[in-house]
Length: 408
Image (cartoon, rainbow, N blue to C red; front, side, top):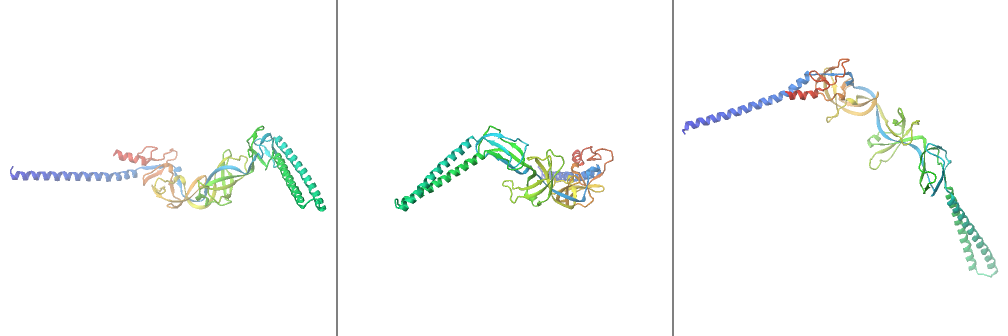
């Protein structure tokens, strides 16, 4: 092959390679331009849509007196309660009361069988009489030996032996008398009386049963003073003081019932690390020992700038709200403080990010595109939450934007 032909073929190959590279560069530039145009198109589409919001979805930001409540739960229990327990092992002959009966201090409640204890008292009494007779013999012997020693008929050693016998007999009598008193006490312990005024809440045995020592027979509670033990987290206890008011709801009782903090435990519970706080509950006819209660302690009350908790969103690193400006809706990061209740609604203090009088969008509206236009919903048009021009009723603009982008 001639040299000029070879040079011509090489030149054609170089031209082809350059053309292919140029084509690839142009294609890449077109794709980049198309990708860059998509966000702009989406932004322009979002700007073109108009969100209709009813009045109930626009929540106010205002300055108000906010009350912080420390929530708690626990069981209602009587401040004074006790179990009537058996002091001796015997059969139950008489049980005079049942659940709900009112008892007075000193009232006879339980009578156990005394047959065994009557015989023990009789046995102890006979032993005491025998010891007393032995003491009398020892005393006479000692008196006689004293006279014989004085006359020189016996030695002083025999007198000392008689004195020791008399002391031993005296000690035996005292022990027998103590045994007699113990037997009498055991017989008296078969009769059980009420240790306090109150109501019988539990009857744990029935007549005819044989029970052992310390067996629980009855539970008595005094409903004149009731309290709740609430287990609070350490960070909540720091704001609790003795005397602070509280309100609670109890199963079966209508409305709220008042209470106040009366004691705070100086130590935390092992395991849970919670701190017991005791609240005295106001008297109420529906309260019963053992009922479950929920409530809140009024730990703090002060004037703050607050936003309804329903408007606060937390799906980002920092909490934020959607602020309804005159023609657009923008997101605004906020810093929050205490939480509390007012006007039957939960509010959150805003320390930074909002000003008084601003309006924010309720969290039930869902996510919104940044800068979306909005207008008030027409009166009587029904719920139009999340409806935008060109969209579907009930579907938020955030949901329709990806679909339109995908269609393009």
